[in-house]
Image 1 (cartoon, rainbow, N blue to C red):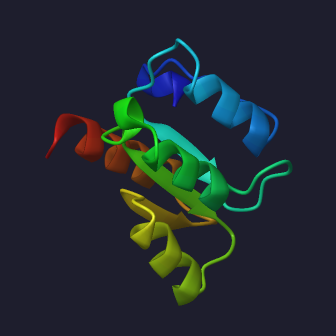
Image 2: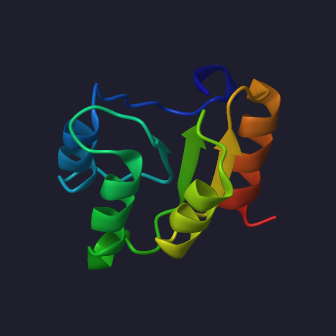
Amino acid sequence: LESGSFEVDTRPDGTAALEAVTGTEHYDLILLDIMMPGATGLEVLEQIRGIERLKSTPVVILTAKGQDADRQEACSLGADDFLTKPFSPKKLLARIHEIIDGD
């Protein structure tokens, strides 16, 4: 992502990610893994969608858990996309551009 000219902010767990996105920084897009310590990506997504100023911030779920139930839950919670690992970095970068640029 950094080579694609994005500024990247990483956090070690779901709790820290939630603290970051609910702080004063603005994020154009949020990437979450379902399996994170502290709070899962789905728990973080649910919290994000409950915050008015973050409701329209795009969220992409990246996960090794590719079951349909996980995809359905992520979509029902408001995820903008769901990519199963392993995935091509080029595919991720292209998808991020599509979401941010509205293509």
